[in-house]
Image 1: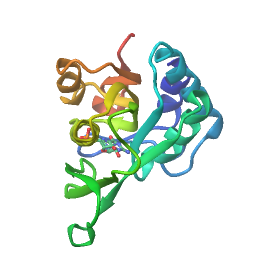
Image 2: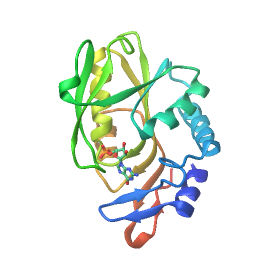
Image 3: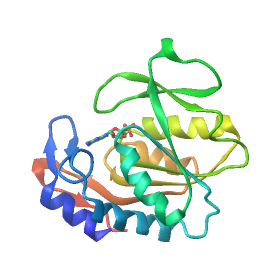
Image 4: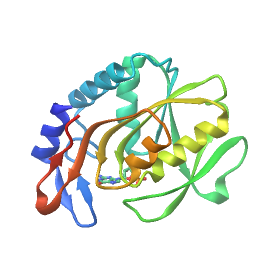
Length: 191
Ligand code: 5GP
């Protein structure tokens, strides 16, 4: 998606540890016009899928998923990062290692909100090593629902997550794929 690539080039900054900082428009200050265009693009990319629910993870996924949901006209559920000691009741539970914070979170979704009848589109802001997505996929699979597709805003193509998820056969669509960002120079994959 050219609009997103251009915005990353203009406002993104590369930090140590393969971190691309996009807090000017994506995950701190948020550009709603851009989010609307991203939502429309995902709707186009997944137009043939019978999606009835969007699943994301707090915190950065929530806003992009919420705007996207307006084009799909379906509810959004977000997975919550929980303290193990507070987990109770009827929840699906998985563990996710955070790329940016280097710690492991317990992540939960209430059984009330996803079940075998659901056809789920998973949305998230970044794909790096794939840990967050594998956790969300695990939750959908525990629920008996179907993963219809995965929409990512920015995939870092030089990390392994995209390959792992595509090799498992999931329909993964990333709006921008950064193939390298050496010396602060961003190279995007043609798609
Ligand atoms: P993964 O689980 O695929 O390794 O990482 C995905 C999660 O880590 C995303 O939900 C995102 O919040 C965070 N993340 C990974 N790489 C980056 C990055 O380069 N920049 C930012 N801002 N967040 C990232």
